[in-house]
Length: 366
Image (cartoon, rainbow, N blue to C red; front, side, top):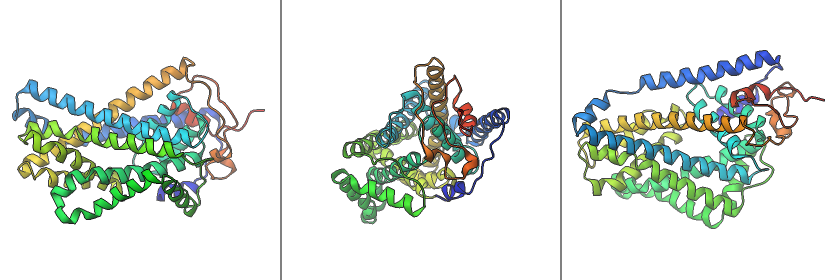
């Protein structure tokens, strides 16, 4: 939220098109460099440890299954976000939805939140999604992510905390309330944006839309959490006892990391919770290995899926199969003053997502 408030104060000068394209290319290189740096800092030494504990062929299959589960779970998370975004404004073509989501998703690897916020806002506006709609979607989706995450986390929380897990049950109660009265989450998200003095979407998500988004997000947590199970089994965890624990542990750990807003990407928080949970079925050293392997598998899966999804989306848009984006309206000016420049209307041409970032500040053509 601090990044959103800081974004409001950012003044983006109206630069010549070659300069904007150069800045967009520089941002793309920054994302690639940040991802490469992140991958280089991961603990790759856990792979020899895992292969030493199991037959190499079996271990390769388990790692492949874990990678696929993580990628499938992220795909279901995209579907939850997609439902909410489409509910809050005019239609947007599928390739453009993919472009907006994964540009923002991969931009998280760039240090600092403001560059990523500017990038996703510009790309969204250039593809027909105004700032108010983007913020409304983000507020609603983040609420559903945390509520469903702590609810699924009960699978591990009860085993880890016993009676002290009652606070997690509060999330389950709230999920039930939202399923029964989806208007509650809409009003809460709108109130939060008003308190932050941020624009909101043209319309709220429907009852059906909120319920469908909860379903997709819950499925996303369960499927993503499954990636932890083959890793735990590979180092000796009992398969039947560890299945629910692994799903709940990953969900609880990741939700705790997200809630720790001052810790980038929940690094450290997630591993600590995962290790504590897995210690119920594994020795502490083995639990730590699985926690580190989980971070490795998830990061590789995110990068592979993001790159493949963006590549496919750009191919379809270049082939003219995505349609032209609708105008994003006055909200696309980002509430940053007239120098930001609104989106005047559909932008023709085969520009990429990062080219769109540079085009978004272009003044209207008459």
